[in-house]
Image (spheres, each protein chain N blue to C red):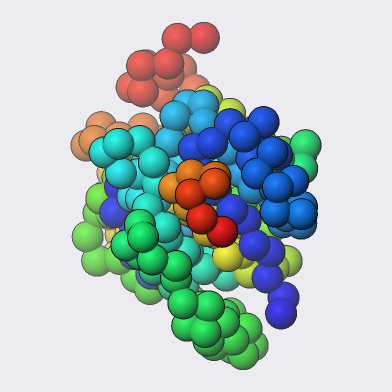
Length: 186
Length: 45
């Protein structure tokens, strides 16, 4: 099975290490969503009000597209059979599956419109991830509706990255403007 | 944020218990990723 498993919880690294040891060592990375607390869990919509994550599984394909989401009751274990079945389905498809076009603006505070080859998009991802700023990326090459929306903001031109932060549009990787809009103090 | 099947998975960089930083986007172009969220260590396997 060609897949990388990543575990994630709000536990600290020492806690995860100790737990892994107690289980005889867990070979796949257990990621610590400890600081900023629950940031990734929140981004994925699985952070519970008491500050812990749901038991949830996301299968993400090689293009970075979410192909399967399962959010489970906190007391239940997700079904391995179902999981392997979904994974097999994804791995059995040889041509790259295009991402489903999203008709409306996605539900996220910060949306970044990109193309896969854009170098400024790469820089922008780095910029945002390092500052722990959650964002949703939209690939305009696979989402014509999104491409159209973007062109509406840029006056018809294809400029990536373009950002939509709660309705405020920032065109291009304009760090100064981005810092202003997002309230980043460097 | 509400995510759906078909959307790009949000990128993140986190520390792992294996003493290396893990970035989701690094796996793009090579393998499928199974991202498993769990509430707390020691609550169950």
